[in-house]
Length: 134
Image (cartoon, rainbow, N blue to C red; front, side):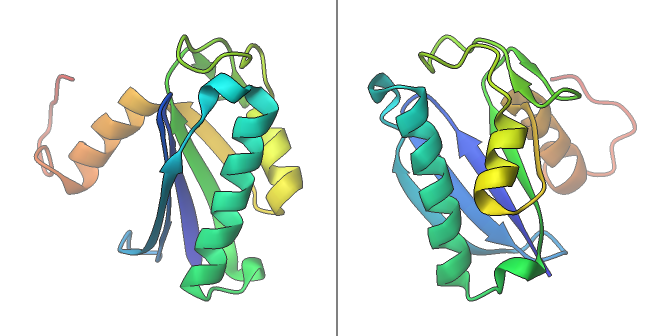
């Protein structure tokens, strides 16, 4: 079983494949090329996900989920990218639906700052803390 994580920024795109314990097995990095527009960036995400899964050697049917962190504002419940300032053309984009259809992997998104805080609480400097400010 594997999971895919996507870190989408205005300049850099990183895709990682991890096992069910959160251990990274494969990482693909590339420029986002945000100035080339929404459709170009989405294609780069899809291509990077497929490349990472293939490089990892995980059969696609064994990938349980794809999580994507990106700048806000976002609506995680609706799977929408609302209008991040550093991703031109990403206004009310149903990115969860687009990525799920393009990759065949159930996709979920959230604000990157929230995911960073969650990561610190679960596996980083705040592990075991009962309270945390970020």
